Length: 135
Image 1: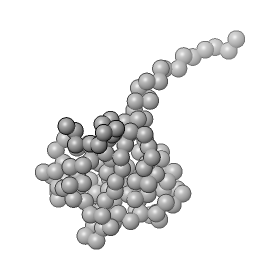
Image 2 (image 1 turned 135 degrees about the vertical axis):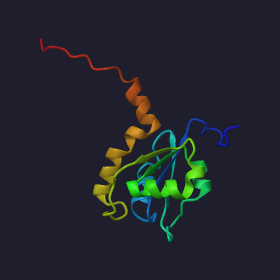
Image 3 (image 1 turned 90 degrees about the vertical axis):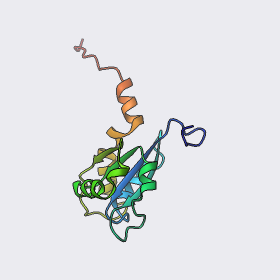
Image 4 (image 1 turned 45 degrees about the vertical axis):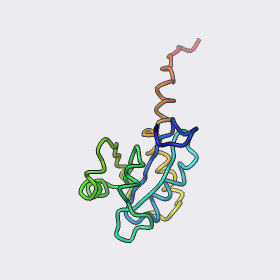
């Protein structure tokens, strides 16, 4: 038993983390909510985060995407025992955007897909381009 609902067996759980879970990580969660092959959630590491990071969320996650290196460091300090076998990726997105800011949306759309399973599968399945000379 995988613990996942039927029909979600191939789905990966992606957790986005920022400080307060009010701007960046909820934006990323929303942008990728309908992405094929993944389920998304978001949380924050701050004391008054909208949804605080918890051991349960970390257990749920197959992959964790943090907005800044400081988030990765704090996550490792506070939750080291719950991170075994988890892939943690730092997106290097600074805290200077509002929720669903168009530039933030473009930024997460540019930075996140290479780490998502469906994108990797598409990239791996795409044959290399053959170079043809103009005739």
